[in-house]
Each structure stands twice: as structure tokens, then as C-alpha cells.
Image 1: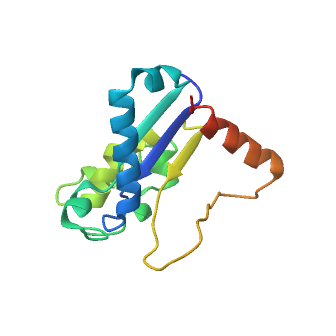
Image 2: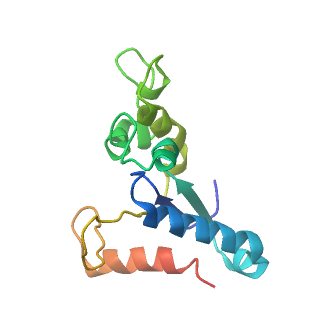
Length: 151
């Protein structure tokens, strides 16, 4: 078992949303150059650029929306097996995003928190979306998990 809390920050799930990519790259650079910041982390922090190929092409996706490739059976630990017993991304000729979802799924399993950064293409106020019913206790748990990483 890994260190707790275990959190991930994903940027670039959509390749044309550069804000999340920039955040992940800046966090990675900070922790690489600042040993005090790295030492102050408690638990495990995973930094991921989601859709690398779409980011390189500056397009939303290559074959399909990566966000739609993470079913519970894949992320929940079931491996995402099809009726043939194999994850969709492992089949010959599988869409790039299906293959990438299979690569990323192990990092998503067992997280205490996931920050999946997106951007809008129109001016908007910042917002956060949390799954399920949102109670004050739930918000405190999320805040505690996320803020516990800050020095």
C-alpha cells in the first residue's frame, strides 16, 4: 500500500485545453527544482498529462474523447475487460484514447482525490465539479486531502 493521502492532478485530458497542461508542467518543475517543496509533500501526488497525442496536435482528441474511456470496470479495478476478456485499449487497432485510458487506469485506482483540470473556450468564472451529493463534510474531506500537500 502506498502513502496516504494519494492524489492525482490531470491536465490535458482534452489536448486543446492548455491550462491544465501548464499547471501540471509547473507543478512538476517546482517539485523537481525545489527539494523543500518535495520533502513537504505528505502522501503521494501523481502529475499526469492525459492525452499526450492530442496535446501535441493541439486538438481536443485524436480518435475519441478520453474522458469517455474511463469506465468503472477499467478504473474500479476490473481491468475494463470486454466480453473477450481484454481491456478495450489492448485490442489491435484500438483507438488512441482507449489505449491511453488503459495506461492511465492504474494511476486512478485507489485515489483519495483527483483534480482533473479543464478549461472553457469562453470567459467564465472558475468552478469545481464534485461527483455525487455534496455535503459540508464531503467538501472538508476533499479540501483536507488536497491542501495536505501544500507546504
